[in-house]
Structures are given as structure tokens and as C-alpha cells.
Image (tube, rainbow, N blue to C red; front, side, top):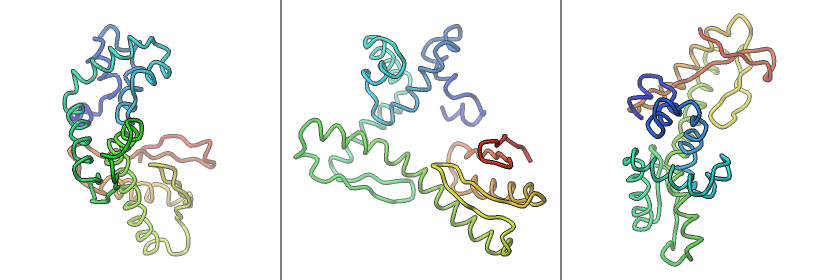
Length: 209
């Protein structure tokens, strides 16, 4: 997966190829995408079957096959379960903690839900930290360079930021923002930041500067 990200490959197609072979990859890309995202949200075979319209037996087989190929992900999940049970918390790449107290006293259903949240938090939480760090850096840049409001950050939607920028400044601001967001932290895979522009949010088109 790291190699695929570094090469800029379609990660879901790559997973489909690994699981179903070259011939069946295109047909199964959607299932691979659901698994790639869903596994780290604690998705089980029932949820996969419901999401993709396949049988429960197929869903279980696909998840087993996925973990057989991606042993590192299976190990991460099991290690996280062990650590949160021992330590009582998990943390993001930046050290922000989420606590899960008294897990040993939880009933099986409560514990399974706590484990699901603990598996997901370091990933989604790190992404949340990254976007907030980027926002702080961008706000400082705009205050210094565009004090008259030529560029304004007006909204955050998950991992996206929305700006209002004067037409003449769009290319420069886009490049500055793109570099700041991509440089928030150094990972083993590239942090890819795409830019879209338009007169209205619903008319945005991907743009390269």
C-alpha cells in the first residue's frame, strides 16, 4: 500500500487486483473501496454484505482474504485492541489522546464498540489534527500577506478547506495553501492536496497551477 501511494496509483484498484486478480479487478473495485475504508471503522461481514449487495458468506471470505494479504493491517488492529485494554487510551500522531476507561468491565457489545472506536481514532484523529494545524498556518499567512481580505478562509468540511479569493490572486494563493497543507507533517507516504476553483461551491472544477 505504501508503494502504491508513493506511485500515485488507484489504491482501491490495487486492492482489487490483489484480492481478485487482474481480470476481476475492475468489477470488484467498489467492493475493494468499501473494504479499504470500512475495515478501519470496524466493519464486519454483515455490514460489508449490506453495503455491497453480496452474500454474507462472500463478505466473510473477502474480509478474510483482505487480512491474509494485508497482514500489517490485521496486526495494527489486534495491537490496538491489546494496547487500549492495557493503557486505557489511544493517541494520534501528534499525541492527542482519547481515553477508554474500564474496558475490562464492559459487556461484550460495549467492548466491541469501544475497540472499533479505538482502532479508528489514531487514523481519523490524526487527519483531524493535520487539517487544524494547516488552518492555523494558513490563518497566519493570510493575516500577514492578505490583511485587506484578498484571501479568506471561510469553512472547513472534514479534510477540505473553502476559501474566497480575488480572481487575480487565485493562482498564488492556491499554490501557497497547497504547499502549507501538504507540508503539515512528514509521513512515509505523500500528503496529496488537490485544488478546485469556481465561482460557486457547486461549480468547482479541479485545477492545476
